[in-house]
Image 1 (cartoon, rainbow, N blue to C red):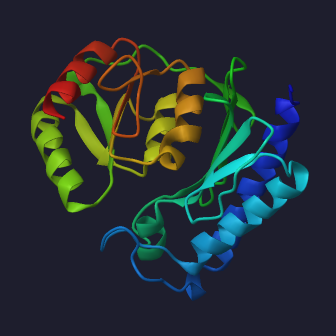
Image 2: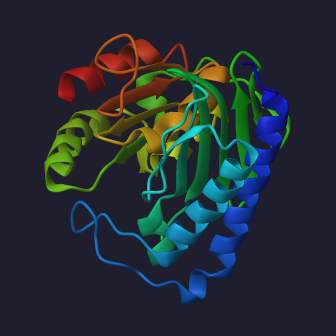
Length: 258
């Protein structure tokens, strides 16, 4: 069954903004819980409250849809539509006040991403996309340019901070940093949407989860960013994005190092 994706995006954008507002309001009173998968995999009560806000509203609107949500509020569905939700991508930045974070909501039909929203609360920026309909920032269209050569490129780097992935990231950075213009470490979703906005020329993400990259990847692709991984498409294990002219050099280096 088809769905009014423009209306879906409007609701998802509103929910992301509301979750972001909650995160700003509760930042001074947040409580950090026990780590999840490893010592650096932190979660706060604000992550959980933000997810509940989004999940409850989506379930009320489309009770037959499935959900994959980072903090455990997923459910099976029967409609063929699946929501992928990261209520607070960049929790360590949020808790420590050392960098940006975002609210991420994506909608799939089967295996195909159809709609995406990434909201950055501090800057009040909402990136969004509908498959085949382009990418937008606060309603204005985004289209990536060709990109500089690698030696002048600004490249975003995202990775899970578990011991094995940090070793893998170190190998990539060791190869990338001397030959690129510079690098920035960012949460995965913002890495991808900043590519779409032309703030970064290239980006890579290592060992993420689908909820980290689903929304940002659709925004990036709809803006004309070239995406891939070890094969012809990106995966949570390895996601590489770049402006088209930068793609061959960056993807070759990252694939060999990763």
